Amino acid sequence: MASSPVVALNGAMAGRASRGYLESKAPTKTRILTSELCRRFCTLGWASSSGGSIAVEVRRDSIPRSNRLIAMGRRSGVRKERIMPEYMYGLPANGSIPPLPSPKPYSSKPPRCMSCLPFSTKGYLFLFNDALELQHLGPNNLTPNPGLQQTGKGVANYANISTYVKAGALYSDNPTDPLPRCVVLDIEGTTTPISFVTDVLFPYARDNVGRHLSATFETPETRDDIKLLRSQVEDDLKQGVQGAVPIPADEAGNEQVMAALVANVEAMIKADRKITALKQLQGHIWQTGFENNELEGVVFEDVPKALMNWHSLGIKVYIYSSGSRLAQRLIFGKTNYGDLRKYLCGFFDTNVGNKKETQSYIEISESLGVNKPSDVLFLTDVYQEAVAAKDAGLEVLISVRPGNGPLPENHGFKTVSSFLEI
Image 1 (spheres, helix red, strand yellow):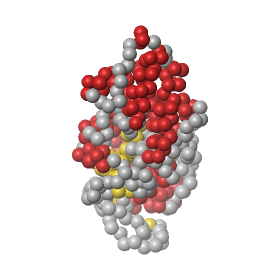
Image 2 (image 1 turned 180 degrees about the vertical axis):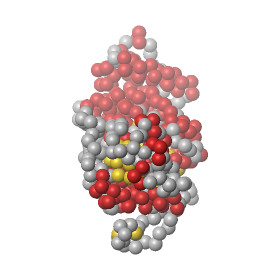
Image 3 (image 1 turned 90 degrees about the vertical axis):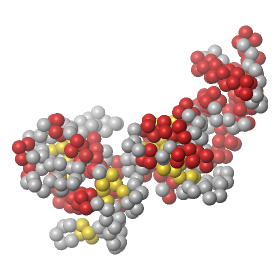
Image 4 (image 1 turned 90 degrees about the horizontal axis):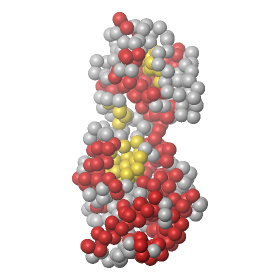
């Protein structure tokens, strides 16, 4: 396969593979491709259970099979859809096991290599080899037929599937519509009902701001919150923002300072202002509520299923919300579907920029390290945010959920009412 990114060991290296070669670009790409195929085959129902001893040749027709490197999954209990590239062995022709794959996070025991390579190659290798052939051939629109059949020669006939592999990435039925490298999610109106934010979180912060300030007034955390609020209020007074009232100096006494802080916070919440000073304090107030079991995060039913699916496909998922990163972690750490943070790779808040400004999304795409902004899919319920993200080059979908506000006519964006539609 001359056009394949996978390169075999040459004859001079047969039987002895240096650590440098085993960690080089070609074997690394083979491991990545193998883990992608394992996930896709499991999703299609072709293979299930754990991924121990799944093997793939680092193939090149000009190299004798006996001299080819083998990439092989460890005996790990890791299901096929969760196999990661670092879970795999690189086996040279002499059968030695050079570097071990990483141990699983919950176990410090070194992984074991099973002695069932012949079974693996007979049972699954034809699937992987045919998939690699698809990579060589490029996009294939195959005629759908029910089921997956095997010929008398042991070669699979692909049926009811239009998947191809290119440069180590799997693509869907539409060859112009690749899977995103990263998904960035809004919270309010996207993962979570607007009513949870407006009817639960905001009232809790408003009703408990005085109690929180009184209990924590002298702590460094709250002193930092007050400093940030002072700065915001001073700017609001200069701008003539409605509801802003002066905050007296500390010499005036804690009671007067707290009364002014409460008045400003209540006005900010009522105006639904997306400012860091408010969001940081709210996050600390909500933290107390979650720790005291007075609050529990709420997400739509399809959200945990989609997060699990994306995670199994190796798609990294992030949150971008006007709420503080602390508040985001709290919401997803204790939800009506349990702790969902294990499916999330990071959190962005207004420190990266306003959600309706294009530069914010440029910052996010650059932070994620993708090759191009369009590798990132952004989901939001707010039209202005969608426009800003699109102008930054991101792919965008608008979330249509119960209770969300109306969208402009002819807004020009694709919409989804469930993450499972993506």
